[in-house]
Image 1 (tube, rainbow, N blue to C red):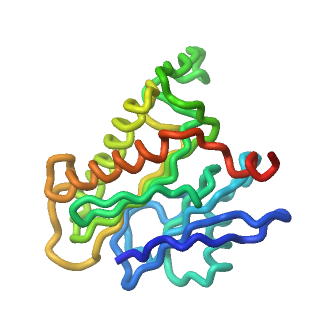
Image 2 (cartoon, helix red, strand yellow):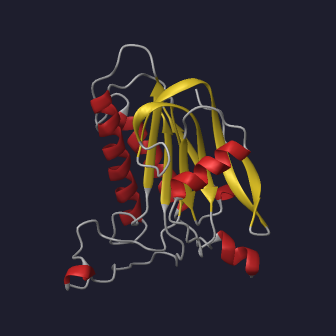
Length: 232
């Protein structure tokens, strides 16, 4: 299983920058859309690293691999990046499923909005009474305590994304997420695999509830980018 995340930091560009580290007592089967360790495979750790809003590296996977090496993490793992201060991670659990989310909603988008690059400007997302957000990226880490089959893992990512979108709408944003969101789902690598991960399945239902609760809580207040807070 995953440990509770450890909050630590690395010295970078003259500053101590926070990051979260999850370790495992045994490697876990994982599906992820993260820049490092994405896809389906067995993973040994997860890192969620804060970066400044001025972040401009075009090799995030290499950067995250460097951070893992500095932390002494062995084997393949998952690496995520965000402008959110990862110390503000929100944890929720439901029926054995555990979820951690860092929630920045500063660049909300509708997934199927028209693309400005092809000449049709995308409308600004409608707002209701949601608080002001300036930092983007919602990173979600999920641990399911039972083995999921490959199709169920993919379905679990969809379920987490649907629950995230539901929470964002309830926060008053006419949006489905931000352009840089990532989801990671981990489960045991052995045991009889469950075939389903949808929102009415045995494990998808608590996963959806926990993700929804975490994103709703994490997005309820004003999120100031870590780098702006440091220079304020």
